[in-house]
Image (cartoon, rainbow, N blue to C red; front, side):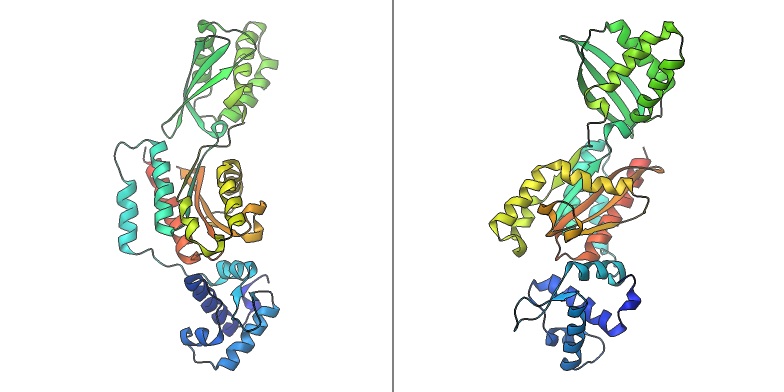
Length: 349
């Protein structure tokens, strides 16, 4: 199915009603339950025929012969793409989010941790927030401090007002004077550049500069090739509300729950999924449903995610993780609302 027109109006209404009912109860949905919730009166026989057609299209599944139907991943995808309703979160919920995030004096790190908690509370799922990888952050100021045993402390200030300390281990010693000259050069030449772009530019300049500057640039290149400055940092990830998954019937199976919790512990997997929002040119909320997730542990889950921005630049992503039986309308609206508010708060600095 490439578009909503491949299902008729009645099929769409039955599918939307069945998805919402199943999300609400977690129980297979029969024709009578659908009939009671349709705005248009249809006989149970007509509804059963429509459900058979939807099942033939791969949108519904009947767990047992005598049971009602449950949506498939394909049904959830169709629902998200064509049937989901753009509802308000409600005045009380939006006020809670606004008041929780509009706190004076909160550091960006504290803000991101708070956002993951708010997303979890509002959506009743697991809240996720991914910061931008260090090498993609925009340099505001950098300082290097010489430490014993060929180590250097890099103090990196990036926009929006993030301060990070990274210890870099090197193969050779640098004097503090050399480190100061290196930092002065970076601050003068590359303020507002991403660390990744700085590293590429330095290697270009080494070939073009006079011999007198080669040692300085070689120092810079060495520092940028090591440790956290070399692109190995996937970005800081905040996770909140994992315990909420314990209440979901989909994860009563001990092995399935254990695999899921292991995936949450391996934060690189979650960071990779959220990172897809930063790599994509598609704006707005993205939804990864069940088997669309590459990792086997996540194939019983849905991830709803969106980028957030510092001015006109995407600097991270946030979202929620829950079972595929998710209240999609609310989750998508919550992620969209919080991403917009986060962008506004960061860009105000």
